[in-house]
Amino acid sequence: MNWVHYFERNRETRRTIPWERGITVEPHVRGPLVRSLQRFQIGESGEGRHMKRGAAKTGNAEYARAVHLFIEEEQYHSAIMGQALDLLGAPRLKGHWSDILFIGLRRMMGLTCEVLVLLAAEVVGRNFFRTVHRGVDDDALRTMFAQMIADEEAHVAFQTDQLRAAMAAMPAPARPFMRLAWWAVYNGAFFVVVWDHRHLFRALLVSPTEFMSDCDGTYDEVCSVLFSRRDAVRPAAAGAVRRAGGAL
Ligand SMILES: [Fe+2]
Ligand SMILES: [Fe+2]
Image (tube, rainbow, N blue to C red; front, top):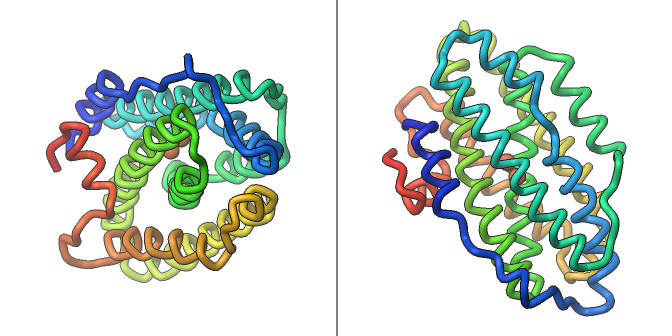
């Protein structure tokens, strides 16, 4: 998969979000939605300097370029969530504990572990956006979330690709430890999101169990690729990549 080609093409084929129509949400959803958007907006705004440095050190120019484009795409998500906040008349956050925790965890480790942490966030984030997309009835919001869901699906495939290569290069006895680490990080990310966004889940009448079953489905798909010895089927992300014109 040529990820540089995918990201460049995806940038040119983004959905047009009908911001001119404004945003209308039910009164009981507005507050929790703003709260959640604020957290994701700041979470996706980072410049990714640590990851870019790690990617550059691999000596793989194509991967380094793909990481650059991937980070630009996350910043685009941050920008559109910022636009949604503006239309909802809500301010952007300057910092949040979940973001500090996430960045700190990623910076503590090398590139492989950083991608592992990021992948857990992508899995949970993608399903969070799906949950909100299903629960809101506003054109601009639905278009914005549809774009981010498609992009996050491809991000899951992108990070999975990198990790799979790193796993394959690892001595076999190390792999069960990586699997345990991935399970722990994924569960940590899941519980942080369920706790921190509990008000929106409640407003949208989504139970944590329902959200867990969505997340676990993606988690299982990723595991089947990461820890399988054969050339396994890629996760659901494959569909998004094909739609964007990539060739898997
Ligand atoms: Fe994103
Ligand atoms: Fe992402």
